[in-house]
Image (cartoon, rainbow, N blue to C red; front, side, top):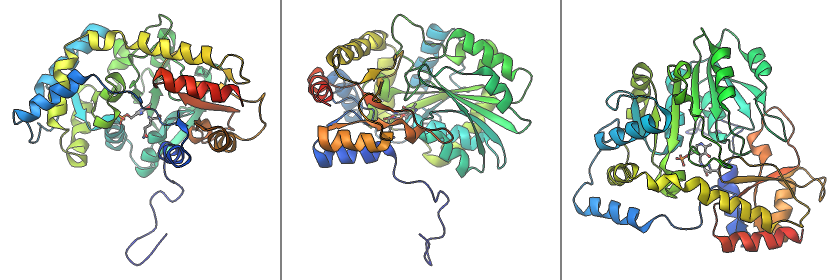
Amino acid sequence: MESAVCPGSRLPDVGVSIFATMSRLANEYGALNLSQGFPDFDCDPDLVATIHRHMLAGHNQYAPMPGLPALRGALCAKIARLYGADYDPAAEITITSGATEALFDVITAFVHPGDEVIVFEPAYDAYVLVIRLNGGIPRFVTLAAPDYAIDWNAVRSALTPRTRMLIVNSPHNPTGAVLSARDLDELANVLDGGPVIVLADEVYEHIVFDGGRHESVARHPALRERSCVVSSFGKTYHTTGWKVGYVTAPALLSAEIQRIHQFVTFATNTPAQMAFAEFTERRDRYDDLAAFYQAKRDRFLRLIEGSRFVPVHCRGTYFQILEYSAISGAADAEFAMTLLQDHGVASIPTSAFLYNSDAPRVLRFCFAKKDETLERAAERLRRV
Ligand code: PMP
Ligand code: GLN
């Protein structure tokens, strides 16, 4: 709304995010909250002891603008080990206040007014509004249910001389789809010779199931040169509330990202960076994460057997898509409200991730929950 002191909104059609909305409603109705993606169990107490130790030791002032050298070094060593990609800790990595800040910094650094950005939908909500805020134009390519694979011919058709960026997210929120090595080859071929920057949102990099391997764009030499790769400690260490993430990119791109970062937050929480630097060096901390969440996925699927929900295969992330067309013909937002109010389970309608195409009759359920929460939720879902 406009007033003498409040001009017209820069994002007039943007409301409160679906994650905030559904978590609020879950609290209001006392529903089990499988909507917003966060664990309902605690992080490792050793991590809390570590951050506390650094706080007590007086590490409570600003970190260096690009991030603590110890953390940047530990992350570059980890990325080299996992993906065979060498990033220079001094010039090619930036520690940010969550992946959300990294996404904002990257899009703002490179998208000029009138530039086009290829976005696969369903798309995580933080991409499109930042593109629009910067005067960019999202060009959507739909990932179609049920397998949500990329149609590379559609990507070729979406490319124009104005395309400045392409955003990929693997493992994919909300569908659980993952990119294959062949997808990365296709991506490299499609973009070959052109000026397009790849923004790769890989926050669920350690949550890939069924023996699959996370195909980071960093692994692919041709893509690495044109990519900004974003990740988050929140997903890997069960610390979504600490809001620490990072972005790796070639030096010239990183310099531009840091020009924005220094005026968005300047620097990221110092004791948290110190704690994550120690934990990043301890490989066992993320090596078993996929098995941990795969067991949760499988438990949830076993528990809802006999219900009328039909699961879509989830290859990664901590989200399970369930199809409900055997239960209701209602649109997803409406059915999510029925489920929340009448059955006490909060979920996320995927229409919140769609811009151009109609929503299939599916909902997203977060299984980063205690076994007891999953059991109680499944019992309710079986009765629907
Ligand atoms: N990208 C995706 C795909 C996400 O699901 C999330 C968060 N849940 C983020 C980015 C943001 O991560 P962070 O909480 O570190 O800002
Ligand atoms: N990424 C989380 C999800 O998909 C939510 C993050 C947020 O609330 N902004 O549920």
